[in-house]
Image (cartoon, rainbow, N blue to C red; front, side):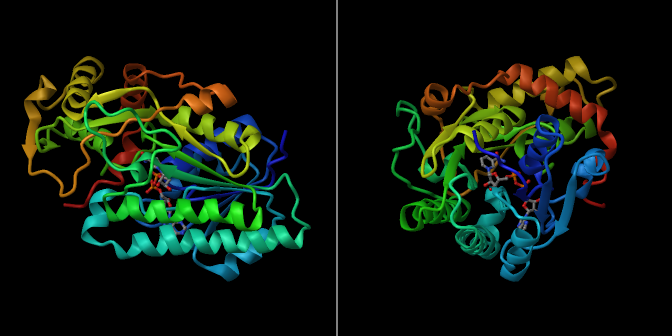
Length: 345
Ligand code: NAD
């Protein structure tokens, strides 16, 4: 097995990154963790507040595109593994303002790969170094209802500036393995949900709007299908890929939880009716409102996670209903966390 310490976690103040920092600390409490995060609107130092004093953790505010800073961190901290989460991640924002997506997701990933390659070369190209590039199933494009789910060999066909920028970064990570032998690994995961999920994304938005008595906006006809994965299951998968994955390989990670957006929202409404007290509008599904569809809205994503299951023995532990229950309970008990993120009116 691979000694993966000290580890640099980029985007560790974001949604999945901060869950991964918690996961790593719980699994490997003695490990040195370096978090690099630019603290954009999506990054929140509060996501790490409960472990910052306990873990052997150093937080660095900085940009993955800052080559001098990365070189300095890699050397100073003797980094052996990078778990790369930092990205612009919201599809709607990528439609309005794609520039930052190209800069961070493509150029930033390139900068990180290049810096890590030099660092790794200087150390004599140790075989146990790892660069985990965390990516999305959106690079595979959209599925029709009866198409088979995405596998690792499905051709790339990104449809939004977000997914195109992630596709570009995936290709770079792959090329660094094939060209230089750098031990990179790529994971393509379906939609995540769970604690610390920024309120602009569908599941937290619906949960919070129910608590606030606001409309629950659903794009188009609500029949778009997504495959949802509880974030802790994703973090466990990434841990396994870092420790047991084969460099140069891609692993798809999915929850086996395909569900139409409208059914998902109905489920959240029912759970909220059950778990929350004093809802401003009840039953919560009275708040459902259909809104104009997003341009280029992919109809369906579905992940075939057979490879990671058979080769590395990973399987999700949560179903959509157990995962949603945990998530809603988390939002109900972490009011101070999300209230601080609401737009000031
Ligand atoms: P997020 O938007 O919540 O977090 C991104 C983090 O990166 C933030 O903390 C932000 O401050 C930081 N960041 C942004 N630009 C940066 C830069 N230039 N330098 C340093 N830090 C920067 O995103 P997330 O949902 O946690 O996603 C994390 C990764 O996982 C992304 O690469 C995303 O593409 C991928 N992914 C997300 C999902 C999902 O459902 N959320 C699914 C599959 C893959």
